[in-house]
Length: 362
Image (cartoon, rainbow, N blue to C red; front, side, top):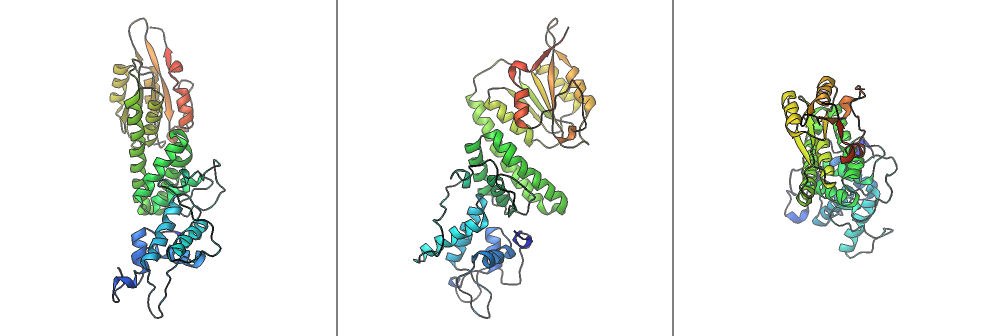
């Protein structure tokens, strides 16, 4: 897509609201419709120019007016693209639905895509792990990713919270938490972060919306798994951010994935002071400790080594915990006593309960 498809400008010099002519039957303006569906007026004009997805009537000498049927067509277009459907295909389906509603036979249009809530994943469209590299239509630098990732990005940029939640729920239901995190959520979050850095504060609302829904969804997975988990007397895995680190989503995903596997966890969250972390290790005696750092500025190799050297347990059978360093902040850290998992799947393998303790001499 061209830059004209990016939702960057929600203002235009027409009436801000339903048509000011005579009645509501005259339709709404392009600016009003753009604000309603969460895209820019430029995007609506581009859809009209490229796909014929414009208002049915165009009175001369007046601004274009979108009738209720026109609005329904645009809403369907947004719903389908948020589900990962390519824009051209979604436009054909939206036009076909409108023509059927008008009692006309669709011209050269395929059967409409009737997707259930949750989008393309529930309809079984994503049959291959990744799609061809293309622009996502979201304005985010996604690259070669799954269609579900593109749909999630589109919904997030439009601030469509309902579509974001549907996409998240559907992806976890179809692919599971690990694949969803590594191939859909992770790339989407990284793209939002890059866009935010490049565009200043313009995309901070997108990042906050997406992060909140991802956190809520992952915590639901955790709670559901924890409620059905059998009681265990095994030591938990401690999950903590470094003292100055505030990013917790990756740890939340790991906590939920461990809960699904019946492994108890102790989530300490963001910004854990060094003294509190060391006290928790000595009190709990964890099987492993995962320390998250998003940037080199928050990583602390001395603290990680201190945790790795901390002994706990009864005299004569004292034990050390395995220490895993998670996140891009540790990329310069190389130490034989510290484990560096690359991704959620690898971290789960390293945290296998049978391999997670390191006995030491008393």
